[in-house]
Length: 361
Ligand code: NAD
Ligand code: DAU
Image (cartoon, rainbow, N blue to C red):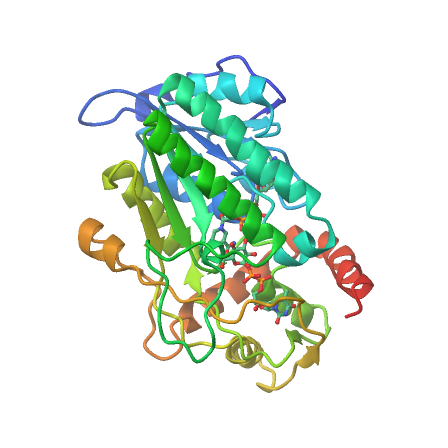
């Protein structure tokens, strides 16, 4: 990895000969924002392995959620900087053929403690990027979330579709919804060549340990008791991060400009309580070896995704689809990853738990 802090002059040229598109024989320059975070890291790794026609530049601010060591040893250009920095973003977009925009503040609990960073990165940052995209007419894929649609009642069997109304509940989802509206307005008003996707909860390697699944895995690995919010009746439509990213690649290849796509792996029947029990069981504990802690204020109840459009129009299929729980295999692999990569998360653990303790947990 080549590391550039703040601005960079075009450092292209590394491995040029193995990065030619076999059809057009042109080199595709891809800018990945937020590429040192959870999904972005997995996307960069997947793209390097499966799509040699791309040369990748990562722009990441390296907030507490980003980790440049995720990209160590990879053939990418790394630029540390803020997506809201218009001068920097202008330079990087000018030098790119395609932009995939993952960068965001992402943790709902953190947005309840301090929403300001969410407005900055998610709304102002997306605005800055859109202005450069408009100027250079660059292909953009914008990573939204299912949370912009709000939540469903636990008794409601409907699923979100591409036409579900926006109804965000938390400062996080409100800022993601604000950014979505900007993207949609720039498509309509300025004809920018953009697509959007709304995915449900991801799990897999490199996820920050503040999030539900890695928090419980690392609780068990450090002899802490796993923590379930409230009753644990809430439902998240879990998807393995590689399945999310395979969908993003398909949309980049074949998605219709101006369209949005729902991404989901049909796991909208698994409660948080079932997930935490499965983690306990897979890690050799009794399935009820967790404790209930105070609930999240305004806690969204149920997310459920209808990915028919992605499957029928683009032929996407998730890979991690066990019949029983839908996530046993992926979860077991994820547990193995955290077990084998203690050095990656262990320095963060005490601070993460102190932050939670400060909120009364
Ligand atoms: P993450 O918190 O793990 O990573 C976010 C990355 O963005 C970090 O590396 C951080 O340093 C970087 N970043 C934050 N603000 C920045 C800024 N102003 N400028 C440049 N970089 C900045 O998040 P994630 O879980 O990988 O999520 C990535 C994207 O996917 C987000 O847009 C999120 O809304 C969306 N998403 C996440 C999920 C999920 O389950 N995690 C599901 C659907 C959609
Ligand atoms: O739906 C997609 C979204 O999923 C993304 O857009 C967000 O960026 C991502 O953070 C995630 O949001 P959630 O709030 O759903 O994820 P989180 O991992 O924080 O929590 C998942 C569920 O688990 C939620 O119902 C709260 C619960 N929970 C969470 C933690 C951290 C617990 O029961 N115990 C915990 O310790």
